[in-house]
Length: 98
Image 1: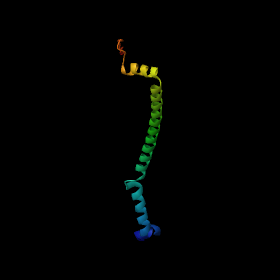
Image 2: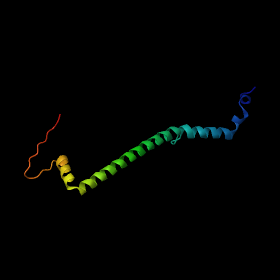
Image 3: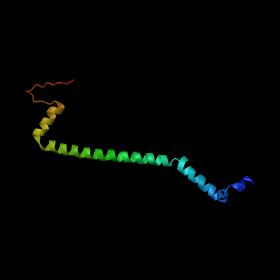
Image 4: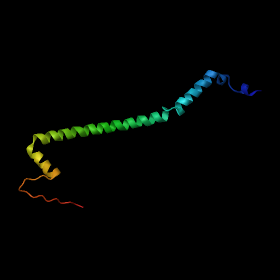
């Protein structure tokens, strides 16, 4: 018996061989292979979560900003605490905790 007779007939077909080679190339060797697609999908999911987090953060900052601009006493409190602003007749003491 020859070697070719031991190989099934369908695997000797050039179209079948080409299709197998093409599939192997696309699945494992191409720049858009399965591993890359999985990694990119995971990265996309993480970026969407970050986007959602930052959108929520933006909303809270906009809300706080609106409250500060509408309430003078709250604005004064914020300026004193955050930027150490003071009235001309006052002294500020900063206590640093270690």
